[in-house]
Image (cartoon, rainbow over all chains, first blue to last red; front, top):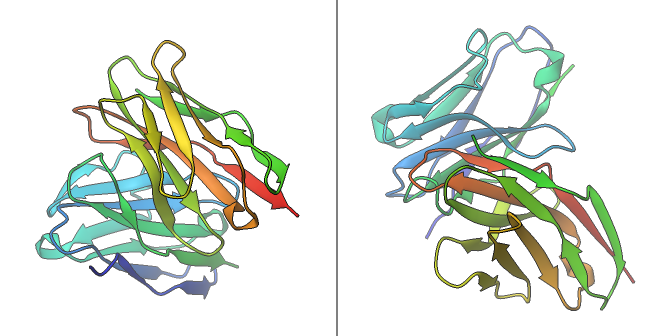
Length: 113
Length: 113
């Protein structure tokens, strides 16, 4: 069974630029999560999809972050414009049943300079 | 709303010694509990989980955790650690019937030879 795929693995951008991350979850997993993990902290949920509907985006900075999940499968997370404090690892995860075991991708390490 | 506290940010231990990583949670309803492990430059992997039934759960690589409802704890233990256990460990909680999983800040386990 293929795992959760994310790209790119690393990205360096200047502040005020835009960036996009892509995630392909495990086939058949209805729930998809995007987490932000700042160095030295635990993952913080940014947005959670159930199929292609948003279940929770209460911690997504909506003035600069956006996410979509096309046809209930792949998802993209965009930041525009980026700030220095957005430097973090962005983790995508998926689960068959909401709030049980989540399977994580390797993450995208974003550095904003 | 639920919350998770991991009481130790770092735990250094010698190889073959026992270890306990502490996790306490707060919730007004029944919960699911998880321990995830993160190796350097990797995403999170599920180590073990408590959903229901026996309060003592075990992983395939010798870790175990016990759900203690009265003390709202889910401490992770291993009787004899290996160098390869060096990683960051995250405790997580979700409310049964809820949608959100909350992660603790993590405990960095460092196993010394």
